[in-house]
Each structure stands twice: as structure tokens, then as C-alpha cells.
Length: 256
Image 1 (cartoon, one colour):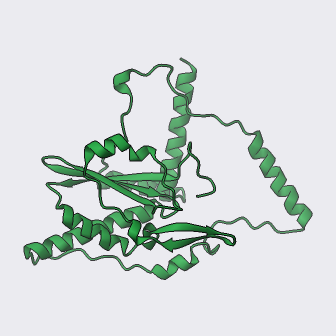
Image 2: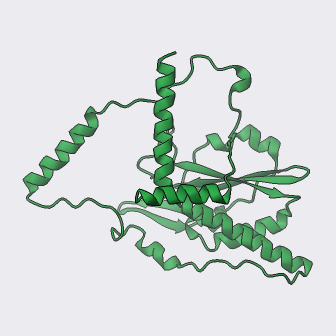
Image 3: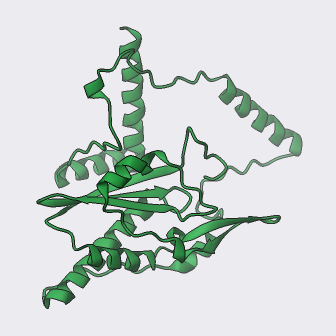
């Protein structure tokens, strides 16, 4: 992730959550700290030396949620890279409205993937619920944090369970196969996502502007079942739809 990162292609992604009502900011801070204790790579930076790069603890670099909307709108954190050699791979900013609070989490992909980020948000929500119940004296049944095995981080680079190509045969055969598929890839035509010639000023995106669509449980289950029928994951199905949509978009604009 670090080797592939560039200004044009930052290895960052976002998750934005909406909380009903008014968020208790101190309780939110404690809940996030509790979640971070279960996700140590989000509290680390990357130290580089002559023998390579390694993760080092940087808990003092963990910043609180930025609730100053005017400040983060001016700073535009969604347009700023995260330098893992100096900072941790997590930024958080939020805003409070009358009936809801919106918090945006920005992750560096070297620290976690989408599944890890979703687990982190689940831990934040559960920790918040536990602290809220404790502060109000509620005795209702509370959700429990899932078991987590931090020892697995020691084997993060293991090839076991990964789809790694192992080419058998002589060195000449392996070089020939690698060269064949490398040349095939280089000959492929790379098509960028086309843009309209002119975009009205009021139609341009300002800031992060995440668009969301809520699916029912039945719709989500249907997508999972469809993916399973083709021996694929839901993520595979969604990536396929993204590619089809991109092709349809380019074909439509090419005819304009």
C-alpha cells in the first residue's frame, strides 16, 4: 500500500456514520479510545530503517474528533494525504445537527481494509452503548464485543490462505510465463473514466459528499445469494457491477 501510494492515488478510504440525537462528545471520545485498544495498527506509524519498514507504537499521535466544522471545511482533510511515517492512519471529524450527528472516519489502507474498518466502527458503537448504559444506570441487555486475536497481526504477511501464484518448473519456464503475462497486461488498452465536457457549477461536488443508498435486509440477502450461486463474494459482485457501470458510462459519453 505504501509503495503504490501517490498524490494522485492516495491509499485512503472513508466511512461516514449518522448518529440519531445529540452525541455525547466525551463519551464518544472514550468509546473511540476503547476501540483503538483493540485495533493497534490504527495507533501506529511506520518507521523506516536500513533493514526495512516496521510498525512502531504512536499512541500519543491519536487525535480527538474534530468538531469544528469551519476549521475542517477550511483544511479539507479529505484532500490531504496521511504520512504514516509521522502520523497514524486514522482521522476523524464530525458535526452536530439538531436531530443527528455525522462523524466521518478516514482510514489509511495500510492499517486496515474495509472489513477491519467496519469492525472498528462496530466496536465504537458497542463501547458507546456500554458507557451510556453505565452512566444512566440502565440494566438492559447490552451487545458484547466480538472476540479478537491480536496475535494474528504477527502473521499479517503470511502467504497461508492467500491467493499467491506459485509457478512451477525451471527458471526458464517461469521467466517465460511471467514475461508472457506482463506483455499481455502492457498491451491492454487502459481506458480512464470519461468526464463530461462541461459540468454546471451547482452540480459539482463540494467536499467529501458521500452518496448513500439504503438496502433492506431482503435486498442484501438477495445480493449475497446471487453472489453465492456464482461461487463469488458480495464484494466480487459489487466490483463486477462497478465495472459494467463504468463501461456503460464511457460508451454513453463516447456517443455524445
